Image (cartoon, rainbow, N blue to C red; front, side):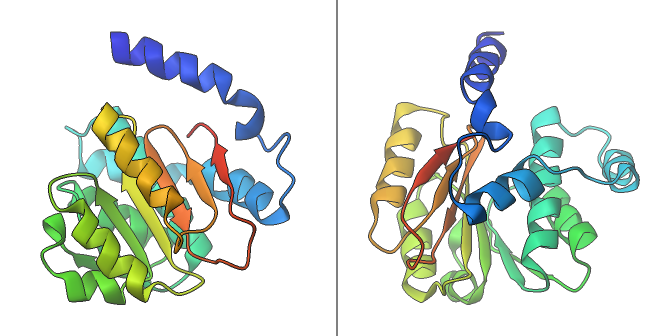
Length: 195
């Protein structure tokens, strides 16, 4: 109950920028409009719900984001570290069927993480090793998605450490997750929007 109220409160605070109002960067505006607040085809949404009838609402919200992000990124290699990898893998392949998905639960396959263009990770035990492996090899078009950044004070502190890192660039705090781009030619800025 408390988490629903808290999420609703933060959603109201972030409402203006969630539609792109007040965002000056053309890249960030386009990303917010197309990926963060974009739409998922009804067919893909129904297919995910049929495949995973026991899934939580949060999982489907995240899966829809990953489908839009894979459509935005195009064919590339994804490294998915959290346990909900199956639903996320299906969502990525619905967005871009030519994408390849590598399952790297808890980031033990660090060489696979380093080779991926997009990595989805959570802030569990060895998150810093996963981040280091990815950030050291990240290209300008690489993307890092970090889940549950507002789960606790420790995860929020870890998220702030990631966006303060000199290798990271533009970032988006979506409350449920965070997205970091590694193009350092763009002005480093963090946008707080709602998913």
